Amino acid sequence: MCAERRTAPPEESLPLRLNIDDSDSPSDVIDALFLGRFTSGTQPYARSRSVDRVKQGLSLLPPGARVLRSARDDDRGATLAEGDGWTVLVSRWNRGADVTVTAVSEELADQRLKQAVDGAEDEPEPQPTDVTMGFWYVSPRRGPHRTPRQISAGTWEEIRENYTAPVADAMDGLMKLTPDDIAGRLLLLHGPPGTGKTSALRTLARSWRDWCQVDCVLDPERLFNDVGYLMDIAIGEDDSSSGKGRWRLLLLEDCDELIRGEAKHAAGQALSRLLNLTDGLLGQGRNVLVGITTNEDLERLHPAVVRPGRCLARIEVGGLSRTEAVNWLGTEEGVGRDGATLAELYALRRGATPATVPVQADRTDAGMYL
Image (cartoon, rainbow, N blue to C red; front, top):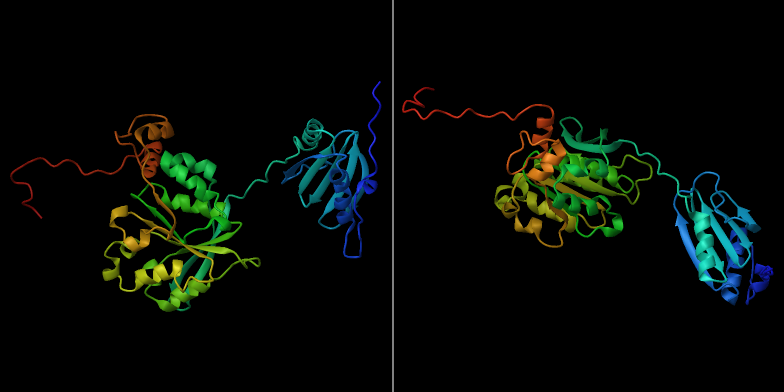
């Protein structure tokens, strides 16, 4: 019969002296005691795992654990427990937890950690389908004005199949973007009408809502020709009490004339002010991104807009290939050789067909009437 392995109490395992004062909480003391057996080498193997959302009622203690210390306060807790040849520390906060196990062997540490955390992750809370978006416009009576509205937006997983594979791959990274990943202040979506650029932006607003306020400018042709209007938007207006430090994404749809190659001549200072907002003096110190949709080909856009380093993302949103369109629709009926745009597929699903002009007969008298 094997003798039970005994280890010294954690406070006796510390090869150092602890100085405790009134700035240390009971949880701090537990953290220090936990390190004793690992520091002394009695239990030289450690394994850790974080659980973002712990299921209700779980202690995260492996079977047979004997609790040595436990502390709780308003938003934090710590539990120190042990078993034969191992020690576990469970640090809790809100719904999350860190679990660390030290043990006399790697296998034992892995086993006890697995017993503690496997199946402990709770399902994520369902996300609301609506997201708040602001709409800027110049009112004849009030001047520049922002009106918040709730808009419906699907998740990226729900609409991903609406985009051809290269576009979906590019969007994957964009949807997961965080403030730490931002390099460039201009987001450019270009491509033919009906390919889903606006739908992608609505979903982007939902994906970024934890850190970014999204505003749509309804009169972009006026924005960069009216300095007062531009300054009001650059300064911003947040609709939440926790808006400090949040980023803002200004959406400008169908701004073909603004960013064409001849924009400098046609639009005066408008293009310069756009670029100044993204990476010039006007944008300094302001967490502002600018998102633009256009139907123009990339080759026709002004080189200053698409130069390297200026764009956070530059994605050409095209139609689905024939194979993708057939898979999306479930039938080949109505799908052309070159595939179809998202708008065309939705029309086909509803049983509608795009309006066409009948072929005119080649008659010598054609065109003789008004």
